[in-house]
Length: 294
Image 1 (cartoon, rainbow, N blue to C red):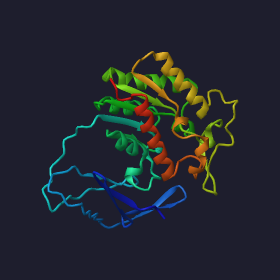
Image 2 (cartoon, rainbow, N blue to C red):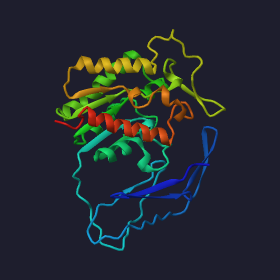
Image 3 (cartoon, rainbow, N blue to C red):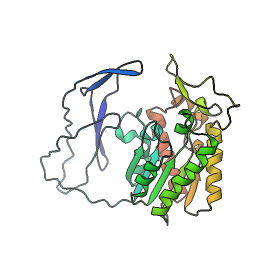
Image 4 (cartoon, rainbow, N blue to C red):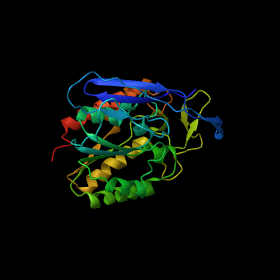
């Protein structure tokens, strides 16, 4: 059974979440989708604490399903709020998508953005953070005060890159963004801990026990195989070589290490508690290292 979709409202200190389980469902037989069961229209109703003054209300839409927004109504006047917070553009994999989070404000970049009071534009694209130029162009076109790029797990677990192709791909990715935004701080983040691929290449295979494993045929003899430990070394060397004062490296193990392995039920994706921990740690690091200072 799929988890419910959740809509969350935030207004100052008030946080209200409404869960729905009546949406359309995709029915799968192994790796093949056999049908889509039609769902119903869901309505999320929120009751705010009374106030005589206008206040900022934010609606966080579900992060774990496709949605169609039909209408928004209120018993008081509504108007679009102006954006005053610094803009943060983030790119990453399913870890950044955080589909296992229990509510949209539990997605780790959202946790961090709320703590840092940032306007978040998130490109957390599950299974698809493969350092491709379409993503670099999309990021380059978004004016930002901070850009973070969490790169590494998908090239490893999809086994779609080698050491030879990964390094120039990352350089090209950074070149595209830097050409459009020469002064924006960019933080290059390496993968968090993942026992499955720390020293074992991809592809990732699913097991009957629900755990994800490295491919048994992957061997060190295959020239150019990537592992997460290798990715971390390569990303740090890329940052060092570029001599860009506005480019920083953040080791993903500072966000989630072997000590938190119990918060990763399938061996690859953190659970809701794990995502909150990552978001809180990123916010702490961002403040300490002045990621938003000029």
